[in-house]
Image (tube, rainbow, N blue to C red):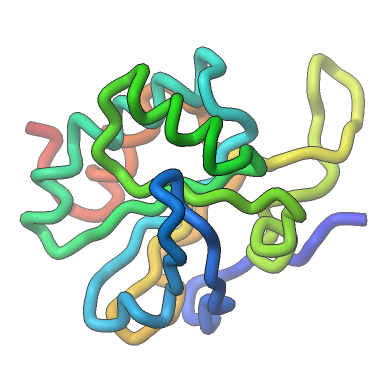
Length: 159
């Protein structure tokens, strides 16, 4: 059972999730801002760490271009807080322990892991426009080099 993926022009499903700081973050409260929502399998694993650090390294530039970044994983807020602290992350980390948001966004379902089909988090990045519609939807992205590719796809230079 795989959730249907979002496509450009779709209305992004709203959500309210708890951040690593214990705050509730609601997507619709960010209207007027472009939001990069990325889904990753687990905090403090090598690929997810690389991706989160890349977003952190780019956050000032992305915010300067009007983007906010939300990283969503099934991890509990306490683990996300440790992840932030360990790697000096400056992006917003959100907890989706029931995987409801991931499922609604097509980022949870069947995927290949070491040649086997498993149910899991599909590393995905969705860019939501200021009006709440999907402007870019990328599924099964690579952790390494993804942020640089995303910046190119968004027309931001790679500097």
